[in-house]
Structures are given as C-alpha cells and as structure tokens.
Length: 114
Length: 115
Image (cartoon, rainbow over all chains, first blue to last red; front, side):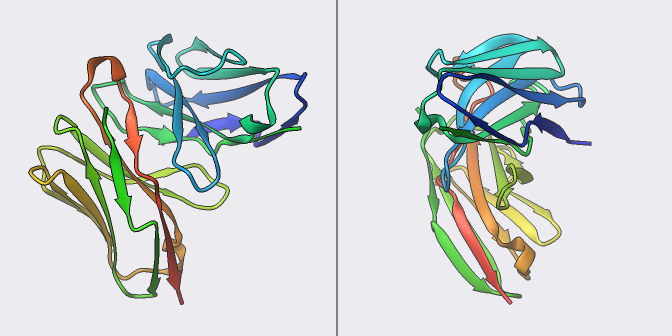
C-alpha cells in the first residue's frame, strides 16, 4: 500500500482566515514533504520533515507553518495568505531522506485564496 | 545546483504508437531518477524509477534508460493507450548533503494519445 491521504480536497479561504491542511500516511515512512504546484508546472518543494524534525525549509514565507505531530501526520497551517498562494498543495512521503528515495504523493488539496 | 531539462513539452501520438520523453540533468552526482504521471485533478503517481547503477529498467509497457556519461535519461511507452494521456514529469535526486531527499523536477510533458 503506497497511499498518502490529504484533507480537505478543496479549500477556499479569505486572506484573513486561518486554516490547516492535513496529510497522513501509514507506510512507516520517516520523511514527509510539502510541495506547491501551480497549473501546468512541476511541484515545488516547500518543506521536508525527517524523523519528525524539520530538515529543509525552501525559504517559504512565514504565512505557511508546517507541523509534524508524529511520524504519520503532517500539517500545513495557513494564515494571512495572498491570492497568488492559490495552488495545488501536495504532500509526499518516503521511507527516509536518503536510504530509500521513492516519494509517494497524495492527491493534493486545491487551495483558492479570495 | 541541479537542473533538469525535459523535452518535448507536448507530445501527441496515435493509439498503439510509442512515445519517448527525454530528460537531461546537470549534477553528475545524481543517483536516482523517478518518473511521475499526473492525471488531471490528481497528484503525481510514481510509475517507474532507475538508479545510477542500472542502465535500463522495464515494467510492462514502460521502460526507462539512463546514460550516465551523457547525463540523460528517457521514458519509453510502447503500445500507447488513451489512458496514458497525462502530464509526465522526470526528476533527479542529487547527493548534496543538506538537500536530503530533494527531487529536482523537469518542466513536464503533456502526452495526448489519440484513439
């Protein structure tokens, strides 16, 4: 089973709202990732968590705040977003950052900021 | 840093024909090369991958080849079917320590298989 689940599927929020995206995997993977994807573009890495610790932050604005409560869960907290933040937000996981590199993606959350 | 170029950006084939998508990478230390298929409204799906110690890998109608000397790798789909229509992304993973499991993606190829 290579399933990564994400909720919600769709989210519309205003620029003053606070919302959270959730990601879950039960494959025993120890690395989890957040990506942002604009239409017809490749995924852009935002954050990497390895063994529940933030490993990579690709200079993402502070209005995006990741959290890894345990090895199966990954959250992305959103606050004071801009319309240009509208995109598909993808979560992915892999067995480790280096040992086994296969990354499996979830279906994504389609975010619209109004 | 690592850069991955992917060609063509769009590809249209007749059902039953073969399709080939090519990628080149810049970092000679890259050691892992996955291919993802993304259908409309879905997340990318890992369809095949190859590691730097292997020259070719096949899985039914899809195959990937790697030329480490030339730093390029290709996806081959034979006997294409309409359900193969999607955007395909190649990626390369480098060995820079602080980049961890970072994949660098190509810009994508939109494949259309016409019945």
